[in-house]
Image (cartoon, rainbow over all chains, first blue to last red; front, side, top):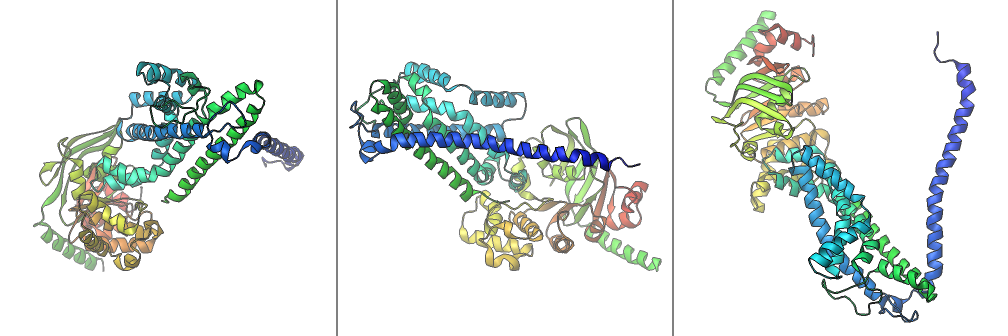
Length: 294
Length: 273
């Protein structure tokens, strides 16, 4: 008695092979969908903006006159924001991840915190904007300055950095830390010399991706009250500022008044995209360069 | 023929017992019990491990032999939910006492693991790691320690020209000897080995066994092994564990030629395990 009947197998073979081809086609379509949308976006943005993108536009000050408007203020504003976001999120994010993964005793408390951090990563960015408005702008009375904006964006991406750092730390094989503990190293020595170097590529990659998110955020900045037209350049943490996505937002908003603003917005998008592209390249470079093998 | 072997074995026993009388115990285990959460993994263990001897711990999988040697340097505490009762005296101090600093213990009681686990650093940095964490910064002293440790583990000649290369470029057997050298660099009194050859090929295994023979002159060694021939070849004493208990602990020759307990005999003759 044989269980596999060749006649039945033969009969069904044709439909099995056909199903395989159909699904392959569907999966290909799904992939193409994303690629096509991206291509349309790029073509449209570049065709509208590239003509307006020149050195004067990048280095110039804001102006209501489209021919004279530049985005140096927004570029500087975004850079200042990053100068706040990078150290704050790296220090607090990696510190939290180290504590949760290596020091905290596993149990309900640790689970509670870990679950809530994951939940926070899903909170809409406008809610963080309101939080920033309440705490940094009003309660601490910073006003709508770089520091307030930077801290608000830090809160927004902190959960992402924490989760990325936690995962990188967890991915460091136990046998490495065991070898260190086995020689009489303290926990901190092991963290500093073995675990962090091994987890660093993952932590940096995650952080840079989180940073890209912060750079592109508009909603929380709108809420904390960024001026629509700001001529002076920001020079420090306590200056008012504007940022690239804000500039895109305001120009798009006013495109009904002055048609050329739409092209300025497109040109700014190109600058923002190039910036994000550079950041992601740095992330990939770091990952490849510092990856250890074991 | 069989008489001759018995005589020869007895000679060895006499020789070894004679040597043993001068030896002090490094670890005195008294009524040790250990639980992983609800699992009673070690039951009323009483063992006396003597200095400058090789003590083999054998037994089937899950019998508690790895747990036992990991208790000797308290690495077992890395597992959440571990509880112990009883005491393990190391040089007359109870290491299970909360006040006994694990860092001190592990400096004096080194460990070699089942799978070679060098750090993803250079060969030099692997060896210098231990001395560095204990505060040695002088480059010349570090150089000397590195050479001495690598010589001690009989791997110096193979690696002396590539000390700055990544340790993961070495073969599995070389990696394990590197790990032993790394352990020697901290100058411990005791070396715990948790199935150090189970991931190695026969030739590398032989090198490690020869190395253990050399090391017993200066170190007390506790080695867990699945390989009965290995225990018979390299150890002075053997402890047979079964279901978390020590069934028999004696001179290796006695365990393998004339075990007192029938379960020991069944195990070493391959009837279970």
